[in-house]
Length: 240
Image (cartoon, helix red, strand yellow):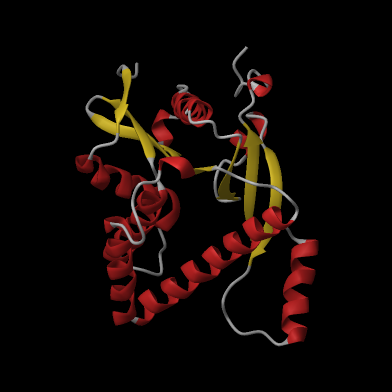
């Protein structure tokens, strides 16, 4: 039987546990050593914290087992670069010391460029956002206990209370993105995340042809939703 799950505000001492969760979820790679994996996870966390204005964690048996970070634009009081941005830039710079780190830096830049391009396209189509679901993560062994649903609902409640009419999030096919489909969000944009290696036009065409035949590439998504009370209860994450 699982220990009781409690929820509270994020604390600084939670960062190592969340970094480990991020590493286990997205940064485990047989081509790099564990220190580099953890550094990439720390970069990921600092990048998220630099954008977040609200956060909650789930705790079981004294361990952090889930986290949600969200941004409410009207609640941002930090001007310009905040401490998380500075820490993130220092960590990114440290990647230049090794060839594997430099490759990881290029990969991250390519992924970020893909996300920025998708959100720019969504905004060009007339979609405006006042909030972002920055990070939603639950430890694998704690899934199926309603942790993700609770954290998601807590953040969307914060959006509603702050007058956020529409919010968005980035995710990809390496995640359980069906969670957002079940929650009733709209998949607003999608892009294939290809590698950074230089390609001739012919090679690029071959890569896209391969995608058409075998859907084995990482896909990045932008989801969005309205916070109108009329949307409450739509596809309530499997809850009857």
